Image (cartoon, rainbow, N blue to C red; front, side):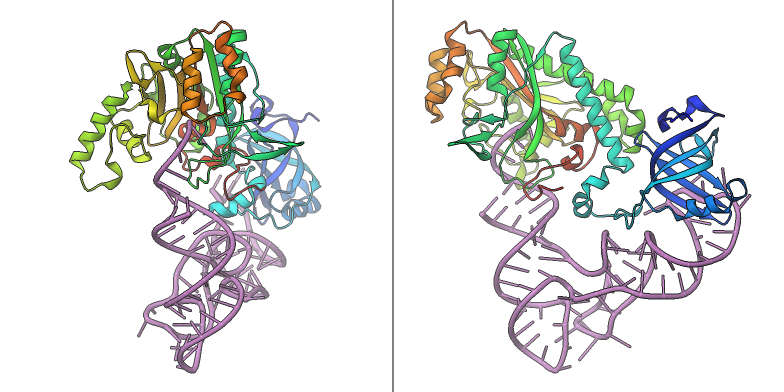
Length: 438
RNA sequence: UCCUCGGUAGCUCAAUUGGCAGAGCGGGUGACUGUUAAUCACUAGGUUCGGGGUUCAAGUCCCUGCCGAGGAGCCA
């Protein structure tokens, strides 16, 4: 008998097939039992009718508990009453494994409890929807860059020193010395860009900051493209093109999942080029105006020259209905490697992309400083040990060129596109300040 | 590190002014031929986070510790 994935049942109407899966839920009513069976690709309602299958099989069907693993053999039937449109008329049932006292019942649960059982929570339909969209986004990202001639270079996870001095790093023993878990592959991608022209890395990064908010993970996935001979404008074009492509792909291929999540798709359909590009100083004006109109709102008050807080970001984004790219931040609040604008020496040739609906920063990018002596000065200004950066300075000694890139936070992007509340649901097994298991 | 809130049955929560520890779901048993988180009846299930205190009496008030959540800062 042919084994069929539930998502393909429509191709087998009228035939007797086998589904291999787990019991999602069941309902019994005297002489008829409904088994909702999932196999990872979908859920199908299997009808067990006592007069058809006999006493023994009927009692077996009634005995199955939630998440019992089983093989179901039956005839595929189109039925308007069934969720999904197809049903299985059961002819035989084979139990594979028991499931006693499955902790996640079909009723409500709190986030903490569900996160404690994350390894089981992954079986639920909502988590399926989110993680399928995550998969689609990853696939879209790789397609987008691969189709444009980028080379995927993976950066190391163990690193000898900090990329951005202020951020806290996870420290590990590395034989007789110390190593840190990477917080960015960017510096290595700069080396890659000088070798291959267009490269990207896409892997986990680690931040040991004690951030307890729904926008923070200690381990998260970051995409970091880097391109030789690219300037700030090209960088923003690259970021904008990526985001519009990702949104388009999800809207095209993950309709079912967006419906499961009850995502307002009209908000995603607006995500088309061009995105607003706003100078930092224009943002100061926007924030000034808002602060004057709302003098009692303490969090909205702002001093031009400072970095934005969460409230400031949402005030800026609320003026538009698309992602906003803020460029020319003050050099004083940005990383050492960012190149300054020769026309505006106190500002960097960098940008942040802020997602709509208050989801915050999803991309940060810049042109990199390409002059050897200027970069040395910046390293000194930031109190970084120059000896650790000799290889990085080599990139400026041997054929330095203008180049730029950005970092995109995968989970923040997934959270925004899914329209969900917690960043932690956007990754299979989240790592947070207070959670390292399961 | 700081601010706010929380910890009661397996889960989600309730418990009036300090006065007998409760419900729904889930589990078990039974009824029912079309259920959509099925329904109905019965049933088992408790160190109210730990420690100390006030009181005739504490889930409730006070002190303290632990754990967690949300937010700030920082960032993707």
